[in-house]
Length: 116
Image (cartoon, rainbow, N blue to C red; front, side, top):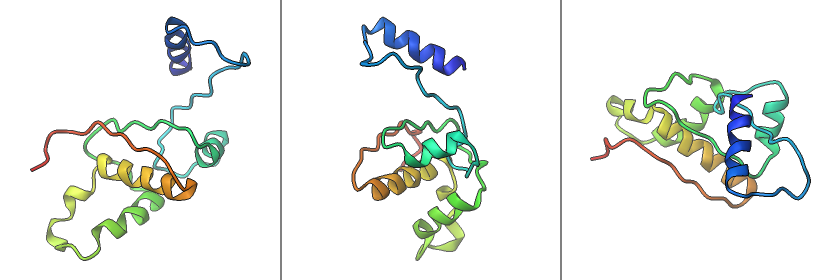
């Protein structure tokens, strides 16, 4: 609820005027987990969406995301695949999934600075 309020205040401050008065649909969820509720329906069927990675270390061990990033780990030295198990890589894969599903899209990320 706080996220919705902050977004509405930001839009008011930027002089945004909606075509139809409607509450902003903001859901704070773990995007990388399968959910069985209204947020999951919107997550799966909405073209415009913003997802934020909030931590480097991943605690997302759901079947869907682990299965989705498995193809990134194929044909790699199995002794050094740990760097592929973090939120940044998972959100890149998440974005790729929706771009493939929708046939188009943009992916923008703010990442850490640990790239070599």
